[in-house]
Each structure stands twice: as C-alpha cells, then as structure tokens.
Amino acid sequence: MERTVLAVTGVPCTGKTTLSRELGERLRMKVLDLTREVEERGLCESYDEMRDTKTVDVELLRKHLSENTNGDMILDGLLSHHLDVTHVLVLRCNPLTLYQRMVERGYSREKIVENLEAEYTGVILYESLGLCENVLEVDNTSGADVEEIKEWLEHGGKPILEVDWTPQFQEALEITGSSPT
Image (tube, rainbow, N blue to C red; front, side, top):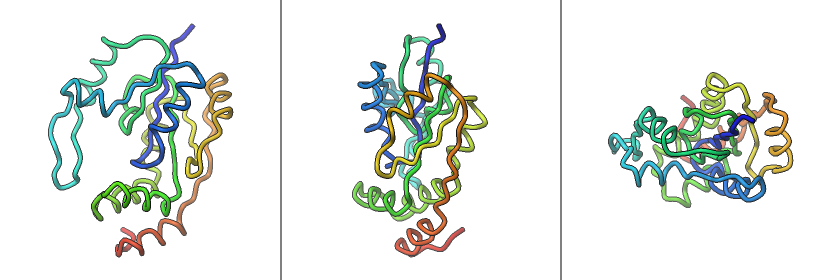
C-alpha cells in the first residue's frame, strides 16, 4: 500500500496548524510542523528582513525528510506543497478574516498586503496544481469539513472549489490603505 503524505498549505493565518492537528488526531497520522523542523534542523538559508520571513532551502528540507521520515504523515506548513507528497490540501480564507488574524499576530502592513494578494490570486493553489495530482481546495474561514477531507483522501481526485474573494479582497485592501496591484 502506498504511503500517504498530505501537505496542508495556504497563506499564513488560514488555519494550517489547527486543521493539521485535528486531521492528525482523526486520521491517526503523524503531523510534522515544518516551521519547527526547519528551525530545529537549521534548514533556513537566510532571513529576508524586508519581507520579515525566513528563506528555506527546499531541496535540503526535501532531502532531510526523505532520509528521516516514514509512514503516513501530514506536513503542516506553507512550503509543504513543494515537497514529495501524495496529496495537497490548500486552505483558503476570506481576506477580511485573514486581515484580522494577521493584525492580531502583529504582521506589518506590507506583509499583510503581500499575503492578502497571494490569497486573492490563489498563488498556492496554482503552484499545488502544477506539483501534485491530488489537490483539494478548502475554504477554512470557519473551519473545514474533516469528513469531506477524509473521504477525499480515501478516493483521491482533484475537486476544485470556485473561490472568489474579489469583494472581500478589495475591502481588505481599503482597510490597509492600499490599492489593488
């Protein structure tokens, strides 16, 4: 039987860690927090001060995981869809909710706008579709349907939701004082 490696990805504040933990418990799968793994294993290349983020050597992370993990697992993290996975769960979230969550975390205005634009344009979804056959897009604004995800994992497939955040994105940008790019 093939090993299942599920990437749970999405822009910051879409609920990746919360849902990964819930899925891990419900599906009895190990959950690997990629942010923690990168920090503990020294897999960070540099720090981008302008974007207030760490730069990860994805190839080094991929090699580390292939040598040090086995069995079914959930990879929790923004870069998880770039790794060797069998399934990708792309979490989406209403930009107004994302905005509030990012403000609560103390993100800079620039980081908030960058992530709102990434959510609006579906960057992670489109990257995932080019990297994996089994991709599921889920609106996680108010929580995801774990049973739907469980069924999708059992049957594979590539259902895509038609998520359109245009009105909420424009309102969120107005709140930040930015204009659409």
